[in-house]
Every structure is written in C-alpha cells, then in structure tokens.
Length: 114
Image 1 (cartoon, rainbow, N blue to C red):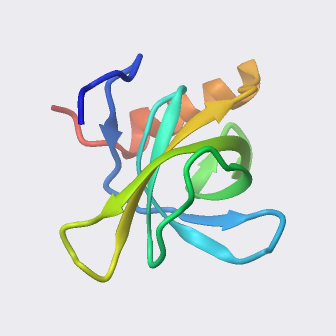
Image 2: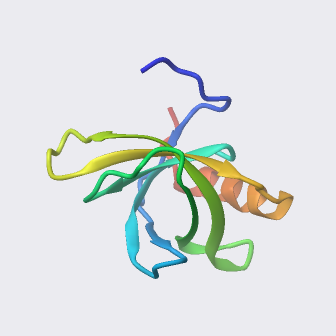
C-alpha cells in the first residue's frame, strides 16, 4: 500500500475502545490516530467507503471529556498480523476545532514518541 496520508500516524500505547454510535456495538480498538484519520483493529473486516459515527472512550479525561464522537469513512481493511483480527483504516470527516484539539491532546499524552 502506498503512503498517501496527510499526517504521519501516531501509534497509541493505550488501545481505546471504539463503539459504533448507530448500533451501540463495539467496533474495535483504536490503534493509531491523527487529526485526519485513524486505524481500528476489529474482529471483522469493514466495507470500504462506509461512513460511521464512532464514540471513542478516552484513556483519561482530556479537555474535560471522557469520550469523543467522530464521523469517519472507511478507506481500507486488511487481515492483521493476528489472523483473527482486521486492521481498518478510516478518514475522519467534519472534524471540529474542538475535536481536533482533543485528538492532538490524546496523541501528545498517549502515543509513542519516535
């Protein structure tokens, strides 16, 4: 896969739970994040070009919030290193300045620095 992302991925050391707001089901665990996109590891692949509304449970209160709601479009899905799981890439849509600040704070406090 060629590298087309606008911002470098930041791998998180805390894999936050991510829920689909429409079904109230767990969609997977957040693995990496930027203000432009994210990757979720899940037990099932996700169809490309599907739009979701996700609730991310933050590892600690950030900007006074314990959760973050984001709209995202699935871009790709592939089997993970663990054959029982799938890596799913999403483009974030309509990110508000407030949500972008929360994402930046999460990256700063919960990502590997390399």
